[in-house]
Length: 279
Image 1 (cartoon, rainbow, N blue to C red):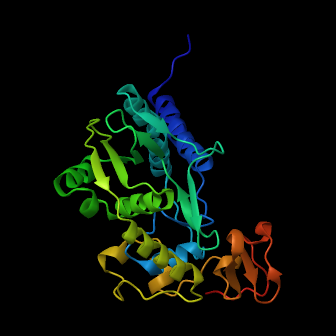
Image 2 (image 1 turned 180 degrees about the horizontal axis):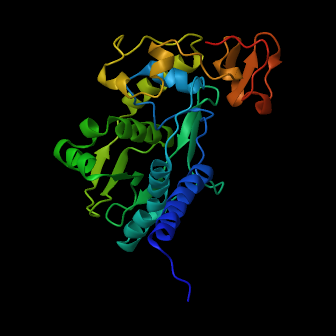
């Protein structure tokens, strides 16, 4: 029988860990989002959202973080099983067989909600469902302060989906992934707030110039760890692509056009051309 020494065992350990890291990065690639997402419109910094929408830089994560994000998506099925197990009906897909999808602002603003729930206690009332995983610190803060204060982006997201789907109430379904604790919050959604957020999205999308900074101090809490800090505060040249060019503009149906060359083919947007002028 073949035996392995201590160095062989350490090599195998390193090969497994490094292999999983490489696999995770390849399997869950960092990609630009084509639209300004409803899930992010509650961010306090409009300038950050503008730069993200314009693909000025790309946020990347190590393999662990990418697996963590993927885990959040996988957990949704488990939460649906819980709800169905207590007699709720969960609709995950629209009549077209796809996720409930909301768009506006010429197709450049939108997102997909987790589902719509009908409870056995008020069968005529639909509830927007939002499933989220938290670590213990985040979960504890949420339990102490509630959805609106603890997770304002999640609140904004739910209000926006509810407004678009004409749903008045929501079920915020968070789980502490460290101990499986679940503390549901039932909320009445604020459609007027959602309208304000849609107006905010429109201003960001249609603006040819970045909005004001949330702070001119790069050490400010919201700026310090922002992946766009160098573009925003330190004059880093944006990534080269059509969306980060001064000649480009968003147009109908989620498309883009160039002031020099007209409609930009979708396949060309990621590369840009020799006439590229950085934002």
